[in-house]
Length: 328
Image (cartoon, rainbow, N blue to C red; front, side, top):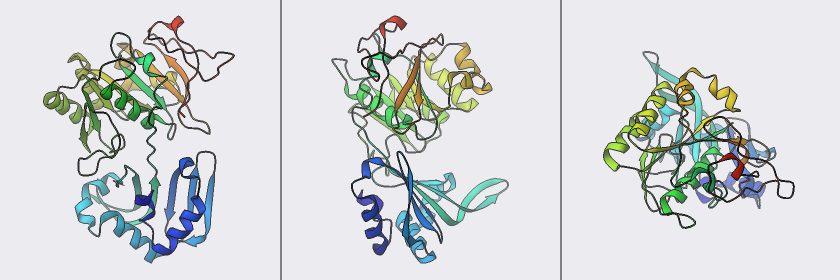
């Protein structure tokens, strides 16, 4: 986690390392606010580094570290409200916003930072791979609230499809990574393991990126994070009509909630997704609550002896699957 620690002034680095010692695997976020104590958020709780207050001098140091002393070079990222650093970690930014003709031009005074720790969990998608494959991959949607593990699960799914798993040959995977969260690219170079046959369109709007990827890289499977807008849906439908399999994610708490969103109406009307995987946000991110087929039938059931196990058979039929899956 050196890439995170180096963002803080040297005196504060010691305090942060001391506070988090032995708990890096549980760490989700470090939230920094000007003239206030540092908040550290773990899987199950949040804590405060009570002996550290972020002065203006300390905050200026951190912003300079983020931008490598040139905020102008990162103008596009700042306009989006985040910066991706080495290791794939994403730093959310807030403060005084400058607008031009009603559009965000830049964040002028940065006074809030949210360091979101990227967690690459190799193998976390092992148990769900048979559920999204049956003589070929099926269109799949991961659904969950923020910090439920959607992107982590999506990333490992991409890696396995692009590298091959359990005798299934590797496929050409195109990743449209609008917010640089899946691959965590720096200057176009992925910081995470996304598989040997994966290509990335980084920091590109999803709708345009999907079409660009299809034209330029001829993917067999497209991976897209956080769909939702009408433009996203239209591009997704065009990709599917071009013969590409889509695996994506979306914010949501239930299948019923998603079906009520006007922008998603076509997707459910046309039964686009053969798999909708609903994540359950509890203490440990990545817990699978339900897996639905295109008809809205839950094909996951809890077994008495193995509450988090899932049948590893590769059938797409409801009676062939069982269990509940947990990312370790």
